Length: 98
Image (cartoon, rainbow, N blue to C red; front, top):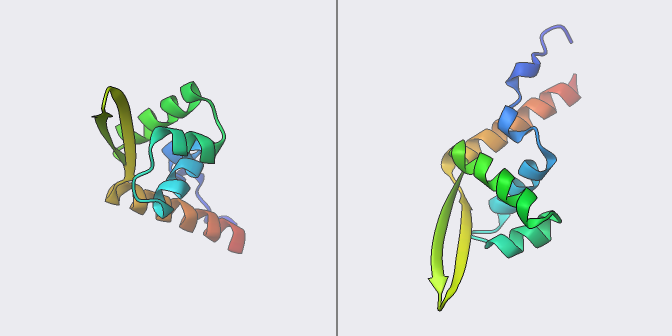
């Protein structure tokens, strides 16, 4: 195991909640905030913080609009985000296979 380097793990994806968000976004085209909150099983504030970190990293895109007078926010994984998630999973698999 001498060739394993922990730095190959993506710091942005070291949170269980962020990995869960990314897993949902890989399988669902453009879920809204409430759908993600229900799937990830977290609070509004906690989800917001993690979504912002993923957005700042360029891993997700955010689309805000109004449905009548009610705001609606939808999220989508970006190509950069898909690549980061795949690389993160590959690094985990490499560690497990050793």
